Image 1 (cartoon, rainbow, N blue to C red):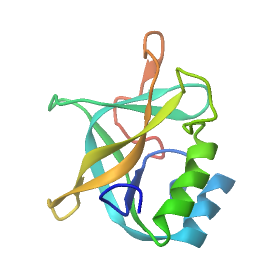
Image 2: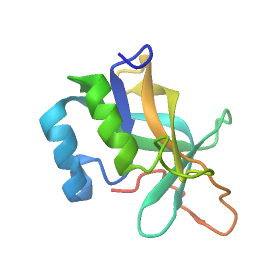
Image 3: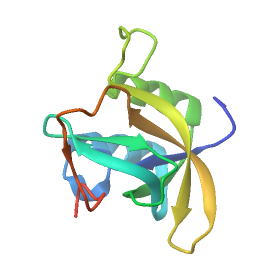
Image 4: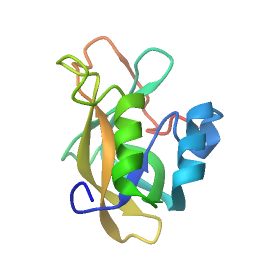
Length: 133
C-alpha cells in the first residue's frame, strides 16, 4: 500500500452530496466510513473547491471519510483525476497529503487528502468549510 493509511478524506467533487460523476470512483472502490472535518480553509477555485491545511483553530473543512478497498490502484486513479500525479507539471494544482481528520465521534484518524497546492490569493473563502452545505 502507498503509505500508512487506507483512508481518504474528500471535501469536494468526490463527496456523495456533490452530485458529480467523479463520486462513482469511490462508490466502486471505497466504503464510506462517515463524516468528519480537518483544520484548514476551503476556497472556491473555478467551480470546484480547494482546501488548504492549517494548524489554526479558527477554520475547518467538512467532508467524508472513506476506506479504500484497493488503495494503491484507486489512489493512482485519483492522482490523475486531481492532476496530482508525477505526469503533471509543477506546481500541480493539488497535492496528495496525509491529514488529521476528526470524525463525528471526536476520534482522530490520519487520512489521505488532496490539498490545493497553489496560492489562495484572490480566491473566495467558503467560510462554512462545507462545499456541499
